[in-house]
Image (cartoon, rainbow, N blue to C red; front, side, top):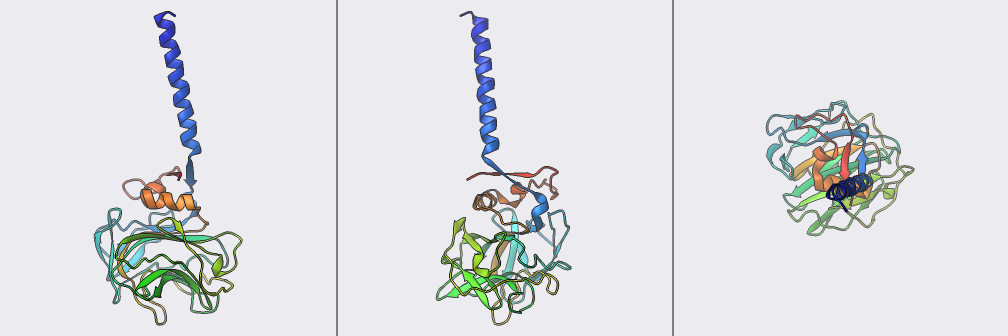
Length: 266
C-alpha cells in the first residue's frame, strides 16, 4: 500500500471512530429542560439578603438571618436554627397533584426536625412540607401533608453533607407515592398515606421556618431547586454530581443558557 493511501485510510478510520464516539456520547446524556425549573438558587452571591433565582421565572428569595459560608458548590447559606428563613415572595409552589421535584444539599448542625422547604396551609392534603423525621439520635428525609407522611431510613443528621431529592411522579395522588432520594439512593417508604391536593395559593414557599411544633432549619443549605416535573434517578444523580449550574446550562453570570443543560448519564 502506498503511503498516501495508508494515510487516507487512517484519516477515514479516525473520522469514523470520532463520529461513533460522538453518537455514543449523545446517547449517554439526559437533557433537562430549563422550562421545567420553577425556582433554583445557587447561593453564590456571597453577601446580601437576596437569593438570585437562576430560572427563567426570576423568583428571587428574601433571606432573613442566614449567613453565607463555603458550600458544596461555591457558597451556601448557614442557618442558625433560631429564626433564619428564606421566603419566595409571590410564589406558592406547585399545586394539586401536579408532578414536582425538590432537590437540595444539607449539612446538619444537630439532630432535630429541620424544616427545609414548605408551602400550603396546614390543612388535610393541602400542606406540602419537606422536613426531617426525628428518629432517636438520627433523622431522615420526610415529606408530609396534613394527615399523612412518607419518610426514608438513611440518617441525614450526622453533620455531613447530603444531597436530597423529593419526587412526586406524574399520575400520583397520595403522599406515599413520592420517591425519596438521599445521596442518589432511593429510600424505603414509611408512614401513613394521605390523598393530596396541594394548595398553591395561600402560602408562599418558605425554606427554613418551622411549622406547628417542629424546628427551624439548623445547618448549611445549598443548591436548592423546585421542578414542575418528576426527575429521574439518573437526572438527580447528575445534578448531585455536577451541580445545578452545570445541570441547567447556566452561564457564569448566573443566566440560563439558551440551550438545554446536558446531564451526564449514570
